[in-house]
Image (cartoon, rainbow, N blue to C red; front, side, top):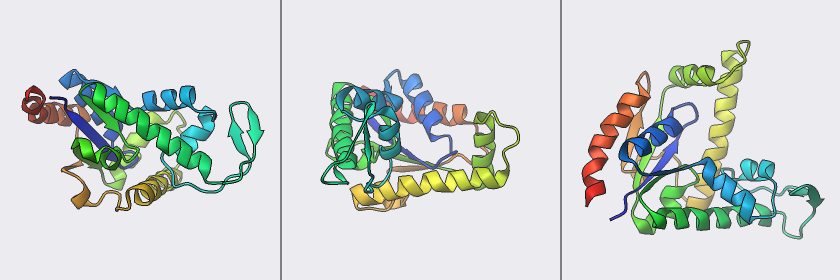
Amino acid sequence: MSLLITVGREFGSGGRELGRRLADNLHIAYYDKEILQELVKNTPYSQRYIEEVSEAKPVPLFPIHYGVSWSNVNDPFSPSTDVFKKQNEIMREMALKSSCVIIGRAADYVLRDLHPYRLFVYADMPSKIARCRERDSNPNITDKEIIKNIKRIEKNRRSFYDFYANATWGAKENYDLLINTSGQDIKELANALAVYFEPRLEK
């Protein structure tokens, strides 16, 4: 029986790394940027536009960037919802193909009929700032700028999830396991989670 794990995460919590390491430990597929790549192949929209809307609440945008050209549409929301619908189709195909970990994109809600194990990864602000600094090559960026960026991205993720799932992003009742990575080693957490999930993978 296939094992499906979805990972919602606060920005800077290490959720993406945790999901990737967990997938590696379990020797199952991992899907994140791969979903974007499939969207670029299977929609008329540019990669930049897809990256902007793939985890954001739909808003009316004019003009819309199609590939290398610009175009207006009658329904200003349709490009966003088109991307969401195609993204859902791609995630479902991936989930049905084999056991896997899928990052973000309200996958826990979209694939709810497949009964995924729904993880949500969070951390305190100092831990998120520290992880953002590890990834950012700009040594001059201030904590204030990092916090502003974290809040902006999380606002988009929250709006996206709340809009499409009609539920509250990060609310404990929407997930099977909440993981606090504050001050924790992501590799060690992934190892512990793998021990938890391995028996379920064998069923």
